[in-house]
Structures are given as structure tokens and as C-alpha cells.
Image 1 (cartoon, rainbow, N blue to C red):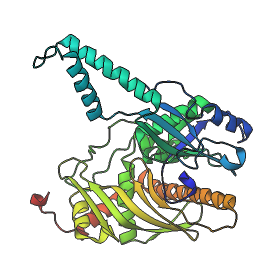
Image 2: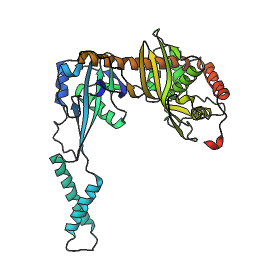
Image 3: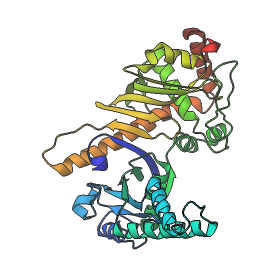
Image 4: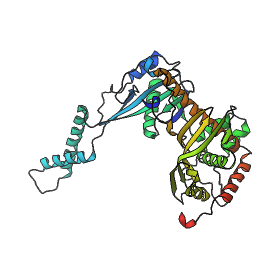
Length: 394
């Protein structure tokens, strides 16, 4: 049931344009209008994309009581395609060629004969698709939250999420802006004064090691892309929790405590020393993790545990995209299933808000005049507390 049960994985998209008004009957009618299975197109030639009910893969029923939950709407986007395996196509081609060449056994088929066989196989593929054979269905859960003007998509596949955004735009006229570490930094800077915005626009990736480089091979180098700040955010968290305090004050007056847990992936920003993937209860305590950042590698993905206002969140964070993986959502255990769903959605909101506020605390240091002093402390920490790297080990 997507976001309504189990652990959740998602990417977030801010709704920048929405003329549909409050959730109601008109929204349900649009879901029905674009329901999966209504297209008559041949699935071998073109996959079909449409809305699903969200309860399970084959659910195509919609109604207000089921799909509208408080200030949110929950449903799915399903893609149906006829995907005939390559070995099967090759077998059909061989059979067709054998029939065409029966009067010339042992000879080599001409170009015309091969084209004839390929046309016969293509026709068979279309016929198989019309019969419903070799059907493959994939679904992405969607949580459209009006309270925060956010659409949560239950996956991290770029192609699948693009399909979801396209049909949401077609059906409801929605426009989106993807939430990444860079977009959050822009939102923070533009919410301040002009000096803060100018500071962000003039910033570049940090070289934490005196002999290091501020090049980042997975960053596209575009002037308006600041997603590399997600890597610096995780390193800043590592330094803060290890050398200062595991509790950080947030701008709303609350506090969040946290730790790295379960998994950690690091990569060399200049592409010379490879990647490191670590699984452990406390991955940053292991020598290989300490050695990796001592050599200049940056965190790209990390398991985190955050606690704020008596709520604990366990999840994996992808640094640049800020996508959330395997987030555990507490089961409240209400007698009413609707109340349970409302509480789960509120927990997802709280997780997103907590992470955004924590990133804002980083931006308060990173964007502006405070960063030079903060960077020096992190550099000193890396140089004094980490073992000297063995260059041959890279």
C-alpha cells in the first residue's frame, strides 16, 4: 500500500503550480479518467501509463473515502508494457528463417529474407501483446500532500518518476520543482537578504584538505547546481556529532539529536581513489571510514538516525538528491485504519521537516561568512584526528 504501510522510499517534488483547489470529487474523477488499462494502444509498440488505486498492483478503483486522507491524496502510477525476452525473439526469428529457407537448406539468407523474417517476428510480437502475453507491470506510489504542497514519489528511478510527473501534469496541470540538497540551499538563501543569495551564487565545492581540489566528478559544474552541498552536509554532520555534540538546535526552537547508523558510502571527489561501502552498526567508527575521509573521500549515502520531539526516524539519505530510502515509520496502532494512515502521513511530513531544518542549520554555517572558520575546524579535525593515508592503499 505504498506510503500507508511498511518502510518507505521516496523523492520529493514541490508543487509550484496547482489550480485544482481542495481535494474532492473532481480529483477522483481525473484519476478515473486517466486510469490504467483505458488505453487501446499496443503495449509492444508503446507502454501505457495510468493511475492505479494504490492498495495493490491490480487495484484500479478510486473513491474519496479511500484515496483522500486528510489533506493528502494517495494513489499509484502504473506502467504496463509488453516486454518479450530477447531469447524468445531470436527463437522466433530462427523459426521464421528456417521456413523461408526450406528450399535452400544450408544456404545463407539474403537481406530481403532477413527483413521478411523480422517483419513476421514483429507481427507476432504485436499479436502476443494484444493477447496480454508477456505483460510487465510496474507501479510507483504517489502521496500528494496539499498541507506541504509536496508530491512524494515512492521510488528513486529517474525514468519512473518522470513518468509520474508527466501524467500528473497532463491530468491535473501540476508543475514541479525537485527537492535536492541544492534546491534546499537556494530556498534558504533566497529567503534571506541579497548578500546571502550572492554568497550562494558565488560559492563552489569546498576543498577540505590543503592539498586537495574542489573538483567533484559527480557534479555537473553548472552554476545553478549546488547539489554537492549534500556531500558537505554529511561530512559536517559527521564532524559536528563526533567533535562537538550529537544535538543540534534548529531554527524553530526544537532540537535534533542523531547518529550515523547501518550503512555508509563514500567516494573520491576527484575520481582517483575509488569508492568505499561500509555496513556496520556505527560505520563512522570503523578504521576504513576514518581512513576514507582522511584521504579526501566524501559521503554520498548514509544511514541516519534522527530524534526530534520524541520521534525517532531511521532512514538512508542520498546526499545530492536528498532521496530517502527505507525509512521506518512508527505504527501508532489506532483502532481506526484511517487514523493510522493520517498519523503515518504526518510522520512522513515530520521526517521531511526534520531533515530540512537540519540542512538549514548546515546552510547557516555554509552560506555566508561563517564558513571559513567552520571549514578550518573541519580541516584541522581531518588532519589531526585521522590516520595518515597510505597512498598505495588507494
